[in-house]
Image 1: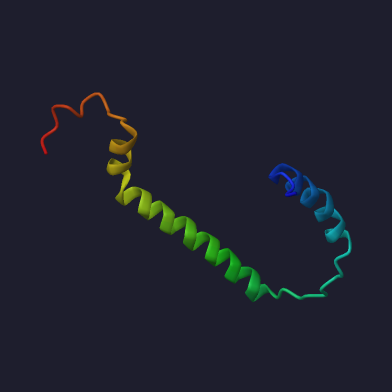
Image 2: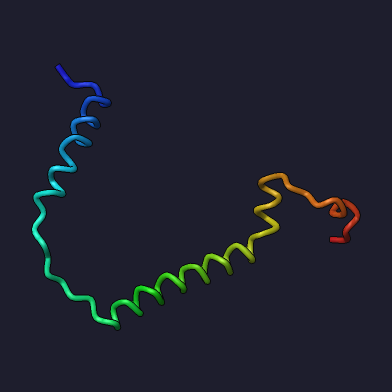
Length: 76
């Protein structure tokens, strides 16, 4: 007989912390170039998302049904 899905998830949540306790240290080294590359990736992603939101802002407002008070008389 199959176990219910909720029971399997609770088993996983019970075992997962023990697996993290058994992990061995990696002794890895992150040099300054790696840190700056990660920072550049994050900042580039944020800038890209901001440009994307700016490009599609009015379409997003139309989808959400949000209108400003003066939008009805504005020329197209």
